[in-house]
Amino acid sequence: MAAEPGPAPDRAADTTAARPADTPATTTGVPADGTGAGAGTSAGAGAGTGTGTGETVAETPAAPPVPRGFAGWRGRRPFWGGLLVVLAGAEILFTEKAPMRMVIRIGMLGLAGYIVPALMVLCGLLLIFHPVQRVFYSVLAALATLGTWVTSNLGGFFIGLLLGLIGSSLAFGWLPDQPRRRRVLRREAKREATPA
Image (tube, rainbow, N blue to C red; front, side):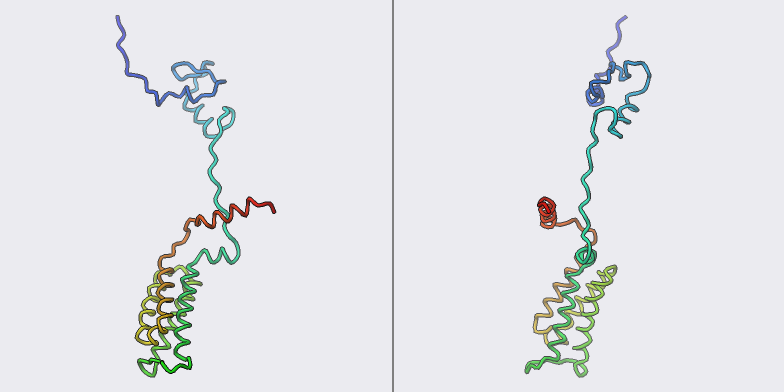
């Protein structure tokens, strides 16, 4: 009686090639010593721990060091966007009281010309010190900045208007836990490579 040919052996599932030379194996995948331990348990234990089989486990890359001090505090909030909004509001407030001949005031005795830039300064400070609601503060800062075009000397003669729009856009686009930039990583690697 002729035996029927079985399916072709699966080369990808063959675990004998991954075994070290000191562990003999038969064609069935059971060790030759006859203990009956399956290849899955011995190979799984060896691959997971990397001890006793001569295999090394691939090390995961270490996380980059977290900056400390002011740099770490600044990195956890939209600092530059908030700072630009504060500077824009301060510049617009300065143009309201500056001794210039060309001053445009609209509203009840120029009251709106002081309230809107003060709101910008407040939004910028909140962006720096309370970054949890950064989306709301940045949208409010952008609307207040656009409002200064009408109420406060054409947005502080365009300077405060541009600073406020750039700062509120930076704060709106800021995201926590961003990957470090390549320039910062290169600088830190160069600092670690140089002997102290």
